Image 1 (cartoon, rainbow, N blue to C red):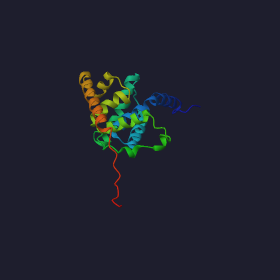
Image 2 (cartoon, one colour; image 1 turned 45 degrees about the vertical axis):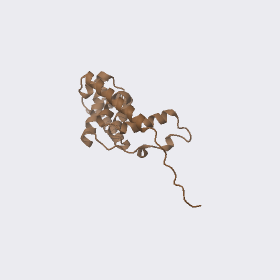
Image 3 (cartoon, rainbow, N blue to C red; image 1 turned 45 degrees about the horizontal axis):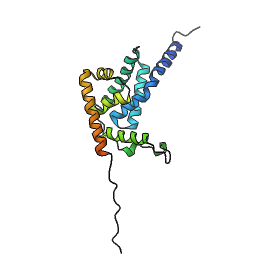
Image 4 (cartoon, rainbow, N blue to C red; image 1 turned 60 degrees about the vertical axis):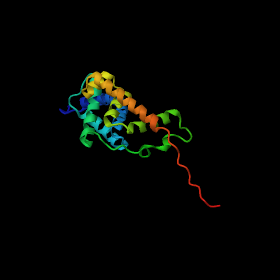
Amino acid sequence: MALPCSTTGTRHLTNTRRNRIGPHLDPLYGYSYALTSNRELSCALVRDCARTALAARNVPRDDRVFKSWLFGILRNDCSDRLGQCDAQPSTLADDLVVEDWGIGRCDDRVINGLTVRLGLTRLSRHSRELIALIDIAGFGYADAAAFLGLPIAVFTTRLSRARRVLMRALVDGNVRALPQAKQSKSK
């Protein structure tokens, strides 16, 4: 005799939904980190977004709409937690895990990634969000503009301005003089 509340269909639905969410987890994390500059909070936001999506009754069928829906869940949760996601950027040292680099293997990708990450912390939340939607989350211009509720022309203008500010921050702030060691006056 079958139980009237069988979970077989639900389990299949949940697995299907997990398969749809899975490819978006890394872009969701990147977007979240761009908004918050905090590794732990970003992980919590992505985890809560996935939980909300798994528990939702109505889920968009279209993949593009589904992606925007997921990012909307994360963005709304971030806004609720932080009052428009205006977190104070953490210092780079807070988020670096030196073991990830490997001894002596600091190649250009790592250096470029760290440089861009530092540059992003110097931008406003709005500029970080524009860049993150396109360059981290992989949204198309039209989809990102629709997600933010902006006309495409306004979105592209703001994105261009944000990228110019990022480039300026990278050029102006990338090279720093090392502090000189104090020499003792003993003879």
